[in-house]
Image (cartoon, rainbow over all chains, first blue to last red):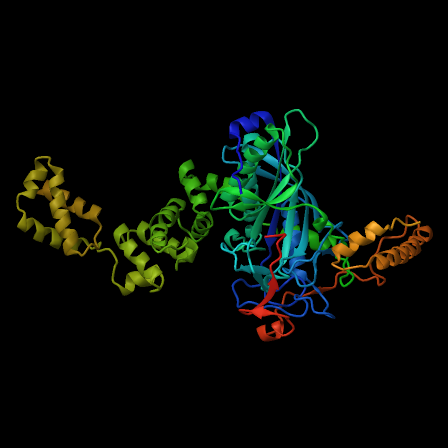
Length: 501
Length: 98
């Protein structure tokens, strides 16, 4: 395949207006599938979460999962949509072995949610309002593994293996209207929009929202039109973009590729394109054609879905704070420097800190622990902070112990290691390991006396103004106390002694 | 008269992966026309007040609670498969999609 010519990005934007459209699939985290009681789980043995309904055996009948409908309504409400009073399911007919029924049960004319909007902020601080056309319920398809091709791709494959564990898992597909006016920030906006959707479904607790597992997937439509032209250009739909960074890169790539073709007098083929993370490019998939003649018709095995006003209002009243608004609020409440707060958000630590603060930690102390020692250890063990064996309540307790002077920072790090090792709560560890800072002046004075006896000239030097001479005594005392002393207090006592003598 | 043409029948047959002879195309064009025309008569007996329905029974909101039910075993699931490998259904590679 010849490498596509790419136009310089800035030049492409001078010549063309960028229009994007995004389709985001959200896999719900219900316990069971959309239309049957099979487990909705990731990573089980192939074809063990399947039943006659989800492998399309004759005579089986689907029944809609109530929780999946409620989760879908909650998503719709969170993105400002209206909720369809009288909706239902349709069959989308196509032949492909990822679904055994030869159709996907989906929604067509009457999606559960429609006409919404979402305000999205891009890294520059610019804000865009993305219009949402619809969010509809459907079922996920099975997983195909292609065998025999050199790269594991379909090209050159001898056969494919199908695992239907994922077939029938509830999905909500959120479709935007064409997004105009983002200009050079269209790639960033695409990524920021998907990030917002991901944050919202996570905050709603209706999806695991892990992009690397395909819980949130994005198809990005991109088209260009010469500046001043009214008619939208021909679009391509890039699939297989499974990270926020890929979305940004794929949109940018398509802008540059299409711009060069159009500038050379060519035309864009309306087609599906595949994003290749390794190469940073898209390649042509199948053209849109007869294959998209899906012959939707109402699903005769399912009855209409008519959510009551009471249900809708109950779900509306339970909506969590919008994640973007919440970030703004916490940034104000915590008083972190802008960089500190951004680091916390980017590292995914905001929720942990919020919980630790709710457990009584001071925001700065919680931040220090999470973005410092805990993140460092997690990183060294190649883990995510969420996988670390410590609760926000334990972090709060650790911070309290330091604040009250019961332990110092060095001891606190030892306590942290012990908590991570599963030895219990910080309080218990301090007690069981006998780590409490020695604050009994008597014990400290005895240790100071001993140290001064070995370094008799120190007091004289201090009196001459050489305060750093105290360091040697403090070091000796700390050593004698095995680190369990408050160094600041030792220093005070040494200086007091020098002034008295 | 309905809009059913031989080309449309060929197109639908293609979408449904049904191999039709030319004789069948002619026969089905006639039969489908009669069916479509018959169904179209319904349009003459309903008015704007008649709600659109896809079911004869006035029933809505039939739901299932989100509770796990037993699934098939892998052996059972694959028992009707023409071909299988590694606990999965084995199918020929289809080249029009990745």
